[in-house]
Amino acid sequence: MARERFWANQDRAKKILKKRAYLLPRLEHFQKVEQRTEDTEILIELAREEEDLGAMKEADQHLEQIENDLGELEFERMLGGPDDFRNAIVSINAGAGGTEAQDWAQILLRMYLRWAEDHSFETEILDMVDGEEAGIKSTTFIVKGLNAYGFLKAEVGIHRLVRISPFDASGRRHTSFASLFVYPEVDDEIVIEVREEDLRVDTFRASGHGGQHVNKTSSAVRLTHYPTGLVVTCQNEKSQHRNKESAMKVLKARLYEMELQKKAEEMDKLHKTKKDIAWGSQIRSYVLQPYRLVKDHRTDHEEGNVDAVLDGRLDEFIQAFLLDQSPRI
Image (cartoon, rainbow, N blue to C red; front, top):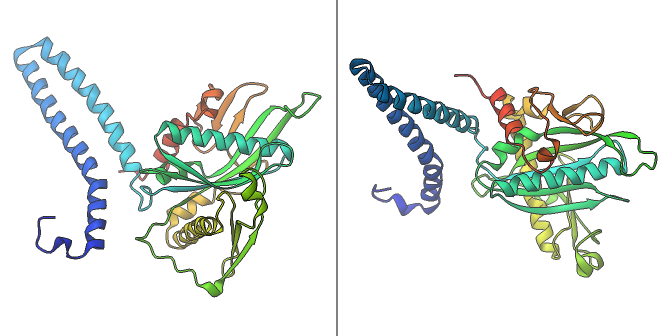
């Protein structure tokens, strides 16, 4: 930064500052642990030489803190992917199960919005299609904050719910499925070219919530990308222009993710977890009847407090998955 002509190229300078802001806290954290380790070595040596029980007790406390610090450093290392720091675009789709699955998709939406709120992430719903009787058929939303994509990529896959149906007068047990997929939001640093001739833009009247203006004007936008067959819709904004802007953001994120799949084996392994939205392909089961348990089938991590999980307490599941995927040193 102090070098001559650092600010001559504003775009380049901003990129360097952004990278510095990302790396500096991690460097400082590592240096802090390194210093604490050196201090602890001195304390242990002093306790041995002078048989000082007080110094040994203090060293034990330092060692406990170092263990916690190393756990935090390991977690930071798990979020070292090239796109982990980015915002996340999340899509939820109801699967097999009709109204049950649509209700389950809405429960999942609430769960992730609560998780985001607990982590002080901003969220913005881009598109939502309501269910016929209850719940939602699908939704797309953005989670904005440092490492949002790094965390939420752990949630990609099929989520299964087992419960006594609130929609079944006989009180029978039902199994429902919903899929979740996550894309890194593409910013101005990454150029994704979408040619006009490769794109079809359709406008239509939005359905569901949003007020009279949204429902009575052709403000909703559907983009069809001919080369890939990708289709993106957005209808939550009152303005057609805003909806097209949001839809383009999602389309570019999906195109970028497709490109990553071609270039990176790691991304390919991650997204192989997204299979048919039906029995046998789930990554996690949420069982409310006949017992209460949430189990991740990839890591075998389990939680008995189902209500807390559905209220957004997902960190232990996310950490277990990221640790399992993280390359060993």
